[in-house]
Structures are given as structure tokens and as C-alpha cells.
Length: 633
Image 1 (cartoon, rainbow, N blue to C red):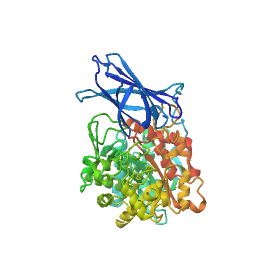
Image 2: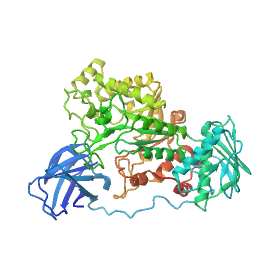
Image 3: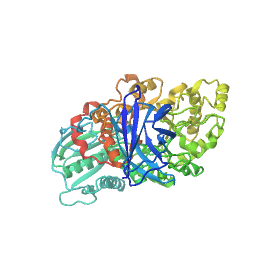
Image 4: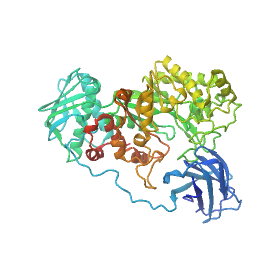
């Protein structure tokens, strides 16, 4: 590596302090007339001071600088500059330059190695274990833990077989075996059709008095799996697969010799979200995420397909959305590299065939796929692909979002916006059979559209005051589009701002804090609880400056995710409004699979057990011992 960039944060002046950067030339040649580009979640505000550099441009997390003096940077020499006027003080080492490159006069981009952000006066803590050793209450590998179990451990059979089962039940059994084989390709098979020495028979029965997703397992010479539906049979098979896997891979685990498990989930909505806009995941990686969710008995996959940083869903009638909106690179006019990117151009999206294939794969595992199309905010990629959607009489930097994007919200005064959304929703509705379509609705800047003459005209005509009343007016039109297509609108809790959309056939996700969910339920909305303080799996897991992750919600250790009770202070009369819980995997910081695994696990399992297992059946120490057996990306 021939160039190295160091980051230091100094606490003065308050409140955001000073960001100091030092680029060292470790090559054998002098650097002349160069520019330094970097991506960073700590951003320069419009009102700032820079010493030692000139600031060329910024687009959200992308920044470009050049030395204030034109003298060459000789081999071994360093260039230091400092910046005040930041969006906030950093939380952790992740919050300064994440990637960087030097651009020389011939247009070549040279990668720069980047060091962690250091913080004067802070001594990093010694790393602490993410999990205690834990202990088993019963020696059965089950996660989430069942809500009713009374079983005696014994030796595991070499395999299970199902004499006399219907073809449908045999297909279901072998699909669970295939799921296990994908997640743990090095381990042995669990199910087959015929008896062999040491195998044990599995008998399927049906009892419509059981809950739809519930099951009963009775252990004896023959194992009987009873359920009211395919979903219940599937969850019972996954429970058997988990116990066999544990017994085959860890001598502390056994298989029931006798007894019974009677089980059903605590909540109907047990979801997990994945952001593929900020950091793109290949379709086989997303498929593995689906497999992991199935293994944890989750039933909703929330696919966050669009955001400022990229539009990832092919819309055949609007090919520009992926041609321009799914392409980022240092040499592009609009979609510049973002957090964790290098200078190279990236063009990444999912074809409709890929999306249909993933929906079918998820359905085969009992998981519903809900797409998210961000509206009206987080739409920088749409406006880059379709600039005709903007009000050209509005200044291009009249407002900026919390992520630092200028004028990134679709303008409700532009008829072309509605035509674009009608086209998008037509194709999305055809690809995704789910009743639910998530439209985002979050983080629109408080002064969005106030500089748009066309928006001001609409506000005057409709008697609207301020951004959020205009947003609410717009969202009611979006809801009508979805209703006409037989879809239910889902949005983040901000869709209730400014009067909100009608609560009937609207589902709201409470992410900012738990109290928001209670307030929304009181207003008549059905609510899914997904607070950042428990279920945002990109959050840092400790207060250590050098730990991985984002920090706006504070440290979220795995036990905090596990212990969090989403019902919390919900009054009894509002609890039927709480549909369930969901984890969110936001991917600004996730540039590698290793980072994904470090931040998502074991907290995904913690949320999954909280979604399935009733409060009085949860046990943090048992979970800590169990979760080590479970798969990662």
C-alpha cells in the first residue's frame, strides 16, 4: 500500500469538535496536483472551516479535498489538514474516513489504506466476550425455545424416516433436510424415506384445534408430529432438525427419548429487514439470509430495495431506474461513491426473474417477502435517474436530509412523480404476491419542498401548512394507489406525521423508540415494534470506541436485544394493535460478510426468540449457550 490516511477526532470546539486527517505518501514518487476523496459518515456541514486543504465537493458521505498549497508531496512526507463544522461528534472508530483514494492529474484513482479514527484522551477498553458461557436447562438444541416442553433426554437416532406419510408431508420433511444441508453443509443428513438400522419413525397427524403456526411433538418409539397447517408441521420439523443437529455436533446436547413439546409463536409478525441499497448483497447471499430466517422460525422478510444510495429492483418500463439509479462511481456525475465504496464504478441490481425466484424460495420456507420502495424521501437515486421529476424552479440545495443528501425527496407537486409510482407499483405488485408493500415515509427533511414554487402552489390550493402536512397529503394518494392494487401500506412511524394516512389497512413500524409504538397504537394504527435501541442490528454492541457498528441508538448488546419486551408499557387495551416484532439490518457499515456476521449475530437469534417465546419462558443464560450452534452468513 503506497498511501495511508490517518483520522483523529479532537473534542474542541464543542459541540462537534475537530476532524484531523493526515495523508502520508509511502510511494517512491512525489504526488503532484492530486485530489483526495473519501467516504465518511461524519460529514462536513455547509458552515465549516478547513485548515490546510481546499474542499471541492460533497455528496452525502462522499467528500473531495486538495492540498491548500500546490507543493508536491514527496516520498515519506505527510499532508495534514483539519475540519470544524461537522454534522455531529463521532460515536466510534467507524465514524470517519471508511474508504479513500487519491486521484492524479491523468484521472487515475489510487487506493488509500485508512486507519481507525482515534480519539484523544480515550483509552480503548479490552475486548469483552459478546456472550457468557451460558448453561442448558434441558439438553436440547432449540432456538427459539418452545413455549411448552416436558421431555426426557436420550440418545439421538441416526436419522428419522416417515413411513406412510403423504407426498406433501414427505416433500416438506425433505425441504427442511435441504435447508439444514445448505446451512450446515459439513454435517450429516437428518431425514429420509426408508428405515435403516438405528433410525426412528416419524408420524404426521393433523389437529385443527391447534394454533395455525403451532405444533405438538410426542416422543416414544414413534415420534408423532401434529399440527393444524403446513406452517405448524414445518416448525415442528425445524425443531426436530435443530435437536438432531445439536446432538450430532455437540456432546452436551441430546434428543428426546420420551415426553412432549407443545408450541406456538408469541407473535404473528416475526420479521427481519435487509438493506441492499447502501451495500449490495448478491442474490445467493440474500437467499442464505432467507434460509437463516427460516431456521429461526421467522416468517417475514422485509426487502429494502431502494434508498438514496441505489435502486435495486428492475422495473422494465423504467429501465433508467437501474441504468443510472443502481450505478455508483467516482467518475459519474450524480451517483458518487458512498460509505465503504472505492472509486470503481458499481452497477448492481436484481432482475425480475431473480426477485421472483427469491420470493418462491422464501415461500417454500413459509416466509413472506415484503418489498420496500422508499417514498417520498430517500429518493436521490430516483432523481438521479429521472431528473424530470424535480421542480426545476427550486434551488438544487434548498434542503438536505439527515444523511446529507440535498433535495432527495420526491416532490408531491409533480404529476410525473405519480405516473412513475403507478408504473413501479404495477410491476412490484406483479412480482411480490405479499399483501404488504412498504413505502418508507421516513426522514423527510423538516423543510423539504418549502423552496419549491410548485409545492407552495399545491399547499396553498389544499390549505396545507408545512412539510409534514404536504407529505401526509401525498402519502394518502400513495395509499390509494396501493389499495387499488389490493395491497396494504406499510411505513415507518413518520407516515403518521402531519395528520397521517388513515389507520385502517395501514401498518406502521415504530423504529425511533418504544414509546412511539404505544402512541401510534393509541391513534388506531396496527404496529410492528422495531426500535433501534433493541432490534437495529447495525448498532454497536458496546461502549468501546473501537467496536464495530453505528452509534445513534447507543450500544445494543445482545442481552439488551434478548431481554427487550416489545409489549413493554403497552396498555392491555392496546396490545391487540401490536402485531409483532422485527429486526432491521441497515448496511451503511456492512462492507464485508465478516462485519455482517459480527453485528447481526447473535442478536438476530435474540430477536427471534423474543418474537416466538413468551416472556416467562425466556432464559438469557440458556440462549447464550444455545445460540452458538446457529448459522451465519
